[in-house]
Image (cartoon, rainbow, N blue to C red; front, side, top):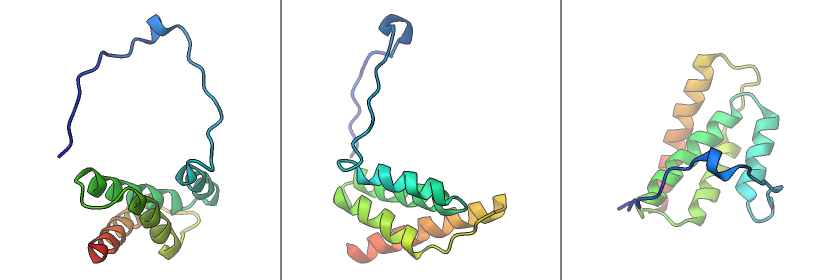
Length: 110
């Protein structure tokens, strides 16, 4: 069960300025992998995103462990055959394939 907390709305005018730092890619390997998939292009970013969404949804339901998210993303992207210059239909097809593949990986694990 997901629990929600009540927080104040973010008012950027009151904050004035934000400070960002370069992310630690060793600490956040999935972010590094997302950058790599973005550079590969084609249908790969859609596959990564779909696998991430499936794994996170199951994690939030307490059906998988946190580290299963990363494993699922890697395995799904590695099993995917990238289409370099995809049509919208090819991207949507890759997305659906990745969702089914990731879900099957996680169901077998359970």
